[in-house]
Length: 66
Image (cartoon, rainbow, N blue to C red; front, side, top):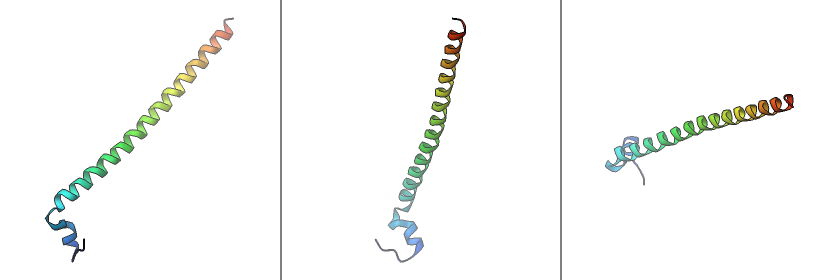
């Protein structure tokens, strides 16, 4: 598709609102997914570290009480 001006490009032949709204929604959702995944990864790693520390404390307690 060839546009004569930048305003024609933005208008997208009368469908600009829907085109740009769909692009905006898509990029917003992708950004939200990246942010959510980042926080989920941090939470998972923290839970894993807590579990390993708890297991280490249990092991030390069992060795000291034997």
